[in-house]
Length: 68
Image (cartoon, rainbow, N blue to C red; front, side, top):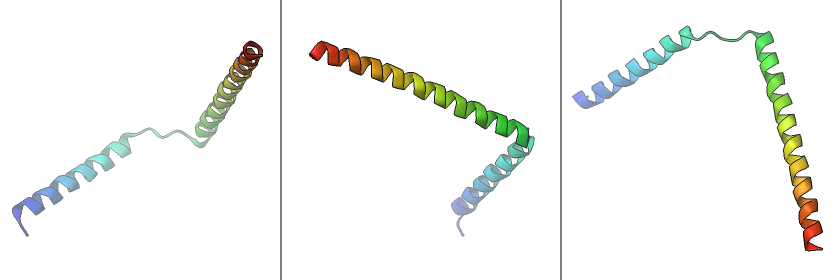
């Protein structure tokens, strides 16, 4: 095994040890918080979709009126 190969393995090992250490520091949300966050995301997506749909409908009707 060459010195370069062992150096790469050492760097990779250090990287994954660092990732594992940082992951342990994360404060994970509880199940209730996660469900609440998912609800907020779904609600906001629905609102955004509704706004885009209304704008699309309005622009379509405006263009149809202009063309005719």
